[in-house]
Amino acid sequence: MQKQELRQGINDSIPIVLGYLPLGFAFGVLANEVGMSIIQATMMSALCFTGAGQYVAIGIMQAGGAVFTIIMANILLNLRYLLFSTSLVPYLKGRVPTAIGSLLTYGLTDETYAVAMNRYQNHLPTASYIAGLHLSSHIGWIASTLLGALMGSYIGNTDRLGLSFSLPAMYICLLVFMIKRKSDIFVALSSAVLCLLIGYLVPSTMGNLFNIIIATIIAASLGMFINERD
Image (cartoon, rainbow, N blue to C red; front, side):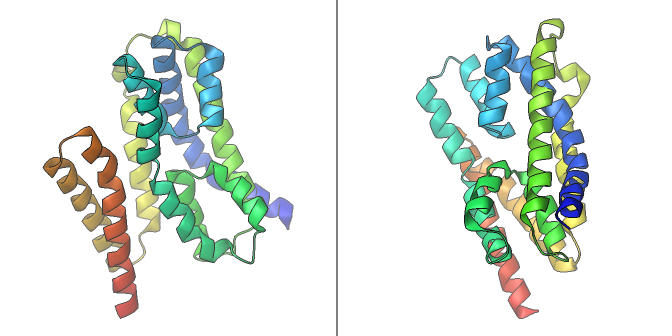
């Protein structure tokens, strides 16, 4: 049973890994451009594992920003994982030991969260499944970063490769898999509109960091309200 769950987690991670490959590769290239060594870039992906946060760090380094700025930006940007992990508690409680669950959720990302939540609608969560899903995704991110850092000196501009669209494309696919009812479409569109509206009304770095969190809270509350009425 555990081997089957582990294998299922690995299989479910394949689309995520395929999406991570160009993004991790591009990060490795950019890290090389700002002066990071191959080991530093690879260890950053191993120890941080936050694609958006790592790209923000690279941008701040390019602008000559301080380490404190990088840390604070990452804290604000990754506050959404507090919401993600909290929403997982009802599924994991009593089924996955707290210590093991806490350790495995180190690999929690937007993509693994979406895939896991989709599975938990019809299957009980297990530590083996989470390990397969999270570890495979993390290894894919680390490996792609390493490859990008190694090839960084040979590639000048990553934009010409069209790598920047891979993450939005993957998010769109994951969203489609999550939608099962008309109310899901309404909540998804509401969160997108709110995110864009807040970003427009507060056109600053702080607004860009908070718009996703605020839109998520409002849309999640709206979805809960709709479910209770149904």
